[in-house]
Length: 241
Ligand SMILES: Nc1ncnc2c1ncn2[C@@H]1O[C@H](COP(=O)(O)OP(=O)(O)OP(=O)(O)O)[C@@H](O)[C@H]1O
Image 1 (cartoon, rainbow, N blue to C red):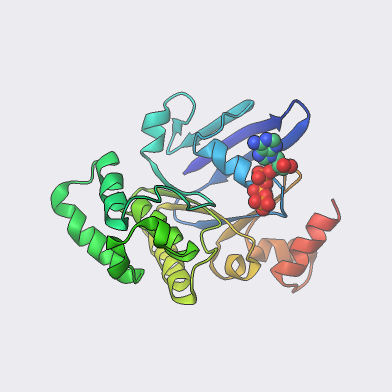
Image 2 (image 1 turned 90 degrees about the vertical axis):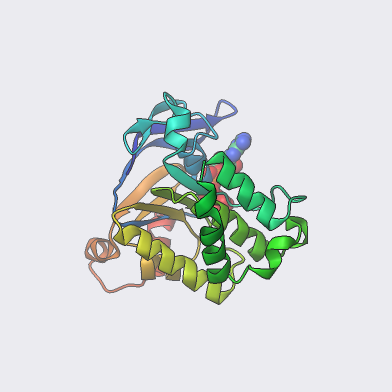
């Protein structure tokens, strides 16, 4: 579970990127985080993951405050950032072993876990090449695999489908469903409303740093009193701001 309470972040003294938001991301559901460019999604995710400090408010992951106990809080989640361009000189397998070391995955568990993930994401052959030779989608997949290796209970994914081919995207969505079904937490940002509409139990819509809506798509339809697509409702919400 992620609990965000009255969190704000201002850049450069005047640009209020996140404006007093509160959200509870429960276990057992897939929650999508939607909003136009510059709405505050990545800033919020960076504060949840402890990359940025919030100016005010508090963020707890499985009850642990990210600013009070950062190491303990960071052990609760796996984070896939929006840019997967990291550790480019390492081979895929070296990166996975590095992640397994950092998160103390027992050595006897590593090979079966890596084999299973490599098979699911069609990455078995690429593991022995340097990450810098990978396509964007392959980089995205190796970062995802590194995160999933230690089986974090909370998944935080910033635009995870970007660059993934249809099969990998399908598998990731399937894994997100499996994870939520085990009463774990899945929170991801996306611009792809069809994906959100299909797999999210609830969506949070942010614009200009403020949460405009948080609930199920069904609740959003009741709010709009119609049978509109998520795209239409999203545009209406954001444009009427
Ligand atoms: N390091 C920074 N310094 C100054 N301003 C920033 C910084 N990071 C983000 N911002 C500003 O904060 C606001 C929110 O940006 P953020 O990256 O959180 O949006 P986003 O919803 O993730 O957008 P996108 O969908 O385009 O990725 C924007 O106005 C952005 O210019």
